[in-house]
Length: 307
Length: 64
Image (cartoon, rainbow over all chains, first blue to last red; front, side, top):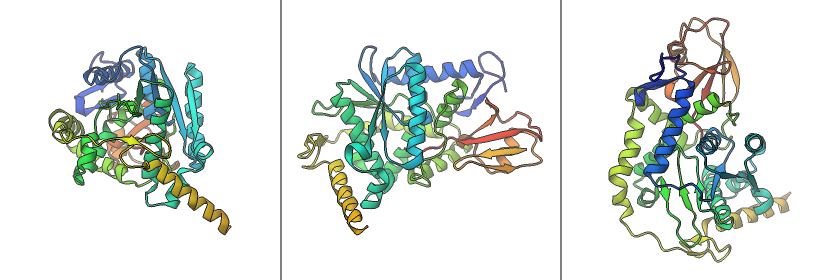
């Protein structure tokens, strides 16, 4: 296969775009897609203070590389979730990436700073591991952005993440989640940072390929707690559809944002108050993270007593 | 040829495939869910393969 632009040997075929690209033109394509997402959704401007949630996986490291190449200064925050070797390895990839490029990476250690790990939260409670993990990530990354005076919290969610999430939200007709699924969540003024997703125009095959082409080492192994989770299953199914009919995922997701999301957003947003425990924004009196933490700490104490 | 699979990492021997596309078909893999790597090079589905190749099939789906 030949590159669509220069006719050199292609390294990737993208049937959705009806295009194949060589290395340099693929890198250009990735940069262009990110620039377009930032511009079309008015995510941020040069000079704003930005912090990126870094996991050590392909998406966050690819995004950090792209944004740096586009001239944005972005700090990183790594959340150590206490998932054994997986968390330690992911931290190594994140640290090495930042050190090689002279970027600032802040590390928040969930077990040290909050007293529990994701496996302990999963063991303790009513939520499955991925749900406890997602809740902890949303809470802590927002807190880091808010406490650090950042204008924008940047996340590495890609087209596949968003399409699979949308599929889940639609399959349950979850109106609250459908109202909130957006490329940009504006700052609320009472503790919620503006949250943006510049990778929404790129599939995870493209972000993984970008890492390989750019020589970025990332955590390839999957989180042991996520194996076989619902979102990954949706992704497999959507990829089967995409294989039969290229463009399905993008049409599904972009069609929702272009023509349907407004309908769900029209409902009044929930009133936010401050959590009585931590002061972070919540819709109830005690936020979901503080409830999860309290439940997990009780579980850990009881377990210690038994042992 | 030797084929390296991930998540978790393991190796299998595959014989009788001429091109990348044939390898994916033989292993029932969806091209959209995987990248095919030889050394540090990405391969498209039309690339011929040799019996002494070492090929990594790297899944791209990740949770989080």
